[in-house]
Length: 77
Image (cartoon, rainbow, N blue to C red; front, side):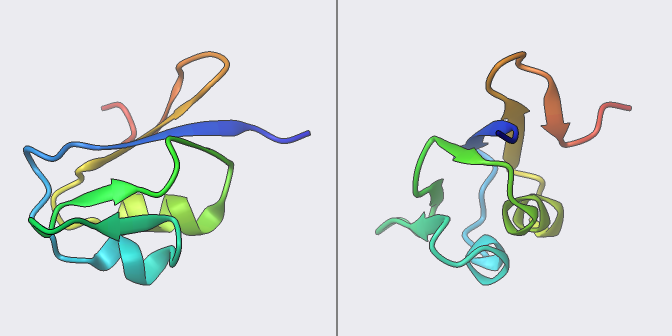
């Protein structure tokens, strides 16, 4: 069994560009305020979800490993 990820969107940073929807269809949605949210708070590790986080113009998406809390994205400096 692979890694499980917790996916969060910082709604205070999100600008509603929709890039996450383009990179990972079905994994993110925009609400009526055009703010992104993950479709599910946890998911199997998925390259499309990672691409969505990497492609977010304001780095509003955080991905962590559910079992350890280790940050997958954004990378630590």
